Image (tube, rainbow, N blue to C red; front, side, top):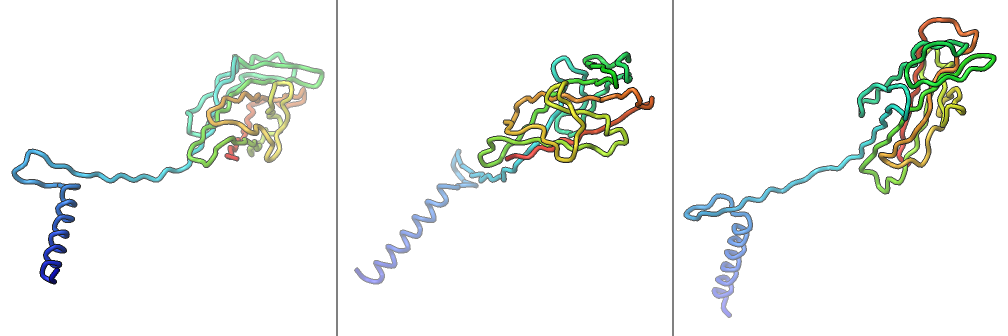
Length: 191
């Protein structure tokens, strides 16, 4: 085989590869009724997480918008004897030193994009409100307690699982009359 033949074969091969490239992504064509175009797509998946709070079964209505992180519940008119007119869905338990008002809430964690997202945990912190000491939280109405920093609330919860908790106020007979406000800060962490 001569050098001229070798160059001719190499040139022909190169021409075939160029034509094959045009066939794969033709783009603009002339004198033909068909052409194709390729669209390469890419995206970056990120982790996402939220904790929604809603009204528990038979509880006082929780207001707020899912995904906002801002929710509230109104307990109505309460007192240390348990004689007030609490909001619909609020239960009261009175004893010789005061009354405990409670309502069930549902916490629903949702998380995606994690490697093996088996479960998450939820901790609770007391907010900075002046009336925080009378606020209560617990697994049941009878086990509600005052909340300290990083108080364990839920462990090993699945994404989109509905988890019932109870919140409320303990109004002692010596509690001064007037509006009361307290905040709980729930933090979700994927394990």
